Amino acid sequence: MRKSDLPFGSEFSPSQIDLREVLEFAKQHGGDWKAFEAAVRSKYFDAHIETSAYNRAKLANNTKLGMQAYGIIDDQATLTTFGQELYSLRHDEKALYEALARHILRNLNGASLIQCIQDIQASGEPVTLIKLREWLEERGIHFPRGGKHPSIMRLWLEKAGVFSDGYRVDESRLRKMLGVATEDIDVLARLSLPQRFFLRTLINLGPDRSYPSNEIEKAATATYGQKYNEKALAKQVLYPLEKAGYITLKKSTRAKPPVVSATPKLVAEVVEPLLRQLEMRLPDDLRPLLRRPFSEIVTELSATDRHTRGLALEALAFKLMRLVDLEYRATRLRGIATGGAEVDVIFESSRLVFSRWQVQCKNTARVTVDDVAKEVGLTHFLKSNVVVVVSTGEIGQEARRYANKIMQDSNLCVVMVDGADIRQVVGNSLRILDVLNREAKHAMKLKVLELQK
Image 1: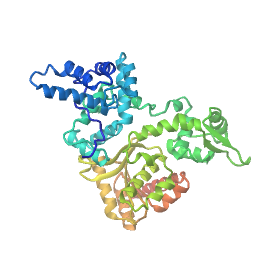
Image 2 (image 1 turned 180 degrees about the vertical axis):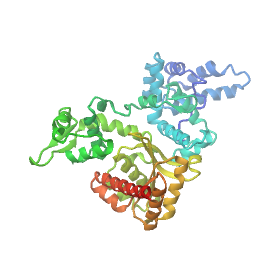
Image 3 (image 1 turned 90 degrees about the horizontal axis):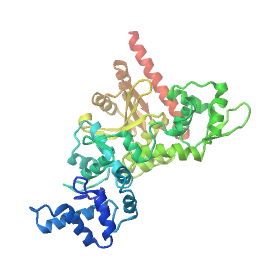
Image 4 (image 1 turned 45 degrees about the horizontal axis):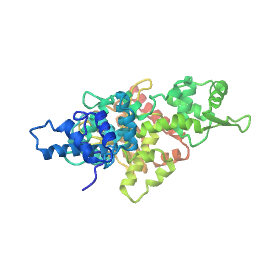
């Protein structure tokens, strides 16, 4: 029998027991599991006179097994290190439930459960245990048929305010439990807008590389619309960020702009919290790829294993869209919202106006008309403004002509990123701006032609 990836929790539920009391029982009877179970049975289950003595004992045993599965006690009912932490917080109910919630989110696949719930909700389908089991299985997370594992996890998370009104997620509470800042990381919020956008652009491009300051400036303008005074860039942006310890500047010649590099302080205070925030929302199998460079991901596109190739392609599309700071919303979205079809990744942006980007990845020699037509059809369900087709091969001429016709006849933009584009971006992250600008100008020409008819 396959082991569950979510903790067993029968009879270890806030609707059945008081966490503070069972922690006291474990403190008092730790090392004597029979005495612990007897205390639990006496307090919570002996009143069930309609239940046999054997079954009442079984219910108490389930409470012990649930606390074991949650990492609070060992098999002898002795408090673990985490259990001792909870015990120390037993007089502060708010802190107690928050500590348990953080543990669930970080160590027990709780963050994956929440992302799955949000993806189901985005698809327009109701959240049920059956649906959760199906969608979690697709992410490689198993719990047994008929198991209440997600429901009990949700109840504990609800005690910390992460859930309310059933499966509604409180995003601010979730971010607090995960230990990450709000969308504008606190460090960035203290900076001026030009400084903030400059740093975010450096982070988007990849803090493991160095870039000429004027290239970061141009990318910040293209991504965020931030205008910079070229002559005052050093005084207003570069030197303050260097003094704050977030960047280093390497000057070459008087005529050339300085080269900017991220410092360990920037990585620790900004990059890592941002990465953790993103990772908690991604499917488990994609998380490790988020931290890997483009070159490694592109190499895995040629792997013999089909699943590895598919993950690498999704990761590539994810990183491409993050270069321009689009906000991730869902992965492998399917169901009612897509008419049963599947979309690889959904991104959104609220800069100036709201837009939804629908991304499809193709690891094939050529993208066909049918490939593009399928994505265009899905925009009706998803209300997308932009379709992005990312291919490791070529974009067929028929596919391009079809995309042109769609852009002429509708408000949609169809962005084509082929293998040659990917190779350019791998060599220099800034090339993604050239690709997107090229596609935007192409779409503008087509729509202008339509207006002139």
